[in-house]
Image (tube, rainbow, N blue to C red; front, side, top):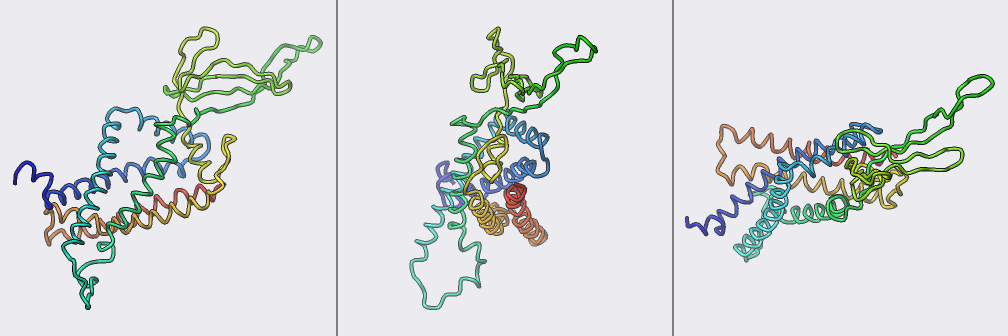
Amino acid sequence: MSKSGIFTSSLAKKYWMALTGLFLITFLVGHLLGNMQLITKTGEEGRRAFNEYAYFMGHNIFIKILAYVTYFSILAHACIGLYLAVQNKKARPKNYAYNRPGTNSSTPSRYMAILGTIILVFIVTHMANFWWKQKVAETVPLHYVENTTDMQIGQDPMTGAPVTRKITIKSALTTNGNYLEVAAKDVESGNSQELVKTQDTELIDMNTNLHKAEGVRDLHTVVMNFFGHTEQGGKANDLALVAVILYVISMFVLMFHLWHGFGSAFQSLGLNHRKYNGLIRFVGQAFAIVVPFLFAIIPVVIYLRR
């Protein structure tokens, strides 16, 4: 095979299809483990864990390289898949009067191109709702917490008892894992004082104008608001239920795509033998059910916890 054939022949395209598909399967596992934090951990613990995970995924150099490989794999897998589907269609120009495709192939295998196209549309909309806001538009706010405490401001001259006022302290989660106080507000009078100003994610001291820390963006709240919550004063998505239903349907489509694609990838690479074909089929079908199911329950649980 010539060097150009490595990339252009039909057989080579099937190899690339299989390799990108298997890579995306491993990506699904990592992505699922990170997203499961949205429902396995609650409150500030869950919010912090997910936001620190999102920060790590966006700033670790190894993960960033894997991210670019993932983007390439998605595009390559989609383009090659559509090309092969068109070529297969051209190779069978006649519609026979008596045709029983089910005798030679499974239902998912006959609709891989359609299923893949639906998944691609889902990926684009999914990235527009979350990835684009976090990475490109940078409209995701910083992670803040507010705690009200009794602060001693003096002593009663008659009894010596401490005199306190309720003060609300606003703090920002920083990339070093600490919370930095950025503002204080007197609950009774409503007067507030900013201690730190923000410039994108940078936290700058109001008095010295020096860099103090870098804040972490609150992607967790964006996700919660999208699926119907009003956390951190955010507005709940009016179409949250529709979003949940479409998300679940997309995972159902992914299940069918993986049902055929997992085993097909090994077959395309020549990794098939009667001794372990049964195992590959079992693992592939189990993966096709479990992973999309776990992805699907995430928005459902979030919505039901409103």
